[in-house]
Amino acid sequence: MSSAASAWMHRELSQMTSAPPVVRMASVPRASGSSSPSNRLSPSNRHSPPTRVSTPRKQPPDLDDLGTEQSNPATQNIDKLNTLEMCRLINAEDALVASAVAEITPAISAVIDCITERMQQGGRLLYMGAGTSGRLGVLDLSDMPTSYNADPMRYIALAAGGDVTLRTARPPVEDSRAAGAADFGSLLPVPQDTLIGISASGRTPYVLGALHSARAHGLLTVGLVHTRHSAVALEGQCDYVLECVVGPEVIAGSTRLKAGTATKMILNMISTAVQIKLGNTYGNLMVDVHPSNVKFAARARNIIRNLAGQVAGSRAKTYSDEELDGVIARCGGSVKLAVVVVASGWGVPLCIDALERRGGSLREVLEDVRYETVVRVFV
Image (tube, rainbow, N blue to C red; front, side):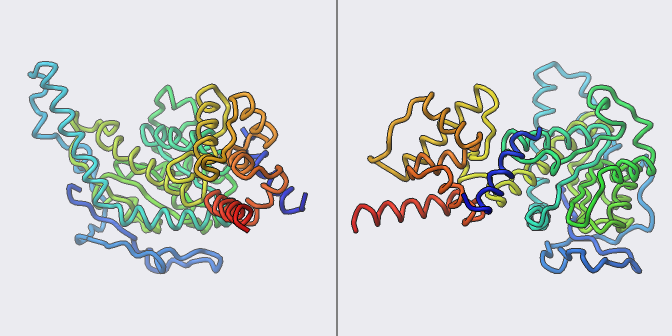
């Protein structure tokens, strides 16, 4: 086995065992006088999503003026409705979220491209938030290892107050910039990393402290907020601010509702698109799934049968579940590698070399297999 192939196999195995209606945004200009380290990427030079910026205020709005704290006229009498009417009203408000997210997809797209470039250079994707924002960040990134066989040390989400806050709220922690900076520092950041600071109000001190520290370390910095003229935007610490304004909540100030839904949609979009661009899917198939339970094992077998059948056609060999499980085991649990083995009939070392030559792209390797099969049959 070549040294490159051995390195590829080692990397794969180590990852598997590691355990608004109107929207403004946008690439936000840096604060004047700020400098950029020479090793810092410059996303604004390569990705310039359209910006619709109203005249900014010198100061972010007070708490009482935040859009997330306003009373929603449509729901002022919600307590007088019967249960079905309540459900329909809440659903109608939720239906506004998707269009608000759609407004900022150009900016989200630019962020995804920048993150992907950094991930390809060995960087990490980091989320930080407080309360619901922090919990949603953890929810999104915690699925990367199982769904995409991703190294969990490269996808890290922190919630203010630590993991205990996933179940029990600790509101005072989010009021400390120092805590945000300290938690960020504990991640031992490098310039190739990306930090997404999540704050529905756009003013959470914990998130502001983290973004300020990330800026000083030369990271790509992204703010995700649901208010206009936010402190996250005005302090100038972000390369991009994703400002998705969904309007007042059904219950005033309850940002776990529409703002939370928008946050989840945006984070899902970012993390999923990054995995696709990194080659961890084949079409819409989860070819890097880690077959760690019954459901994932069945999914892995179905993927192998599907893709191998597409390549080999009528010449495809029929494998039992037990035989496929054996192939996956010989491949160290790598479903992607098992697909190549079954589709090609080659040995594991040769399939590892094939994937290494194609940068881990299963699509390109299967094209090679198709070509080799045609040559063998007709020449």
